[in-house]
Image 1 (tube, rainbow, N blue to C red):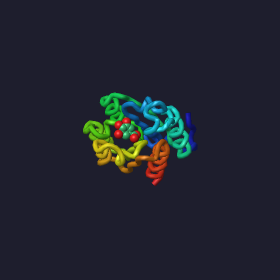
Image 2: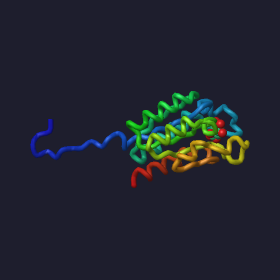
Image 3: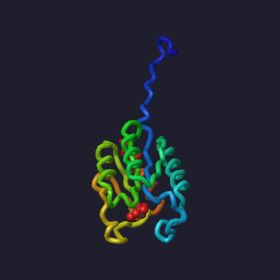
Image 4: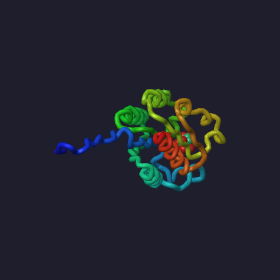
Length: 160
Ligand code: DQA
């Protein structure tokens, strides 16, 4: 119990200290999934690297991967309570999901969208992402480095 004269310490809210790292369908297969397109780095390796880069900036990470649209929407809604920003690779849902874009729009958090491959150099149906309209930054084609860039971007935004 603090005694008289002790300066009161205000705990910084966790909201300011955590990023949500969200990966969509089939990204659990990274490492073995079309390595010629997505490389050989596993999702566990990406999550670990993201956690390290975020830690350097004083940020924690909650990593969620799901193959289900509704689970991704739930994770975005939950982030409103205790996260300061979202790094998302919506995978195939980028090109189809109004629900995920709406959830991100409602979250009121800075959003960094990541694609391992350069979606603009691939099939036409991959050129449009619903998420890009709500993202503050988009990186595509940088491989796993794109996640690192996204974290650094959000850390910079949060430090402002
Ligand atoms: C992806 C690109 C999407 O078009 C694709 O459906 C994915 C991964 C990428 O990281 O390059 O699953 O988001």
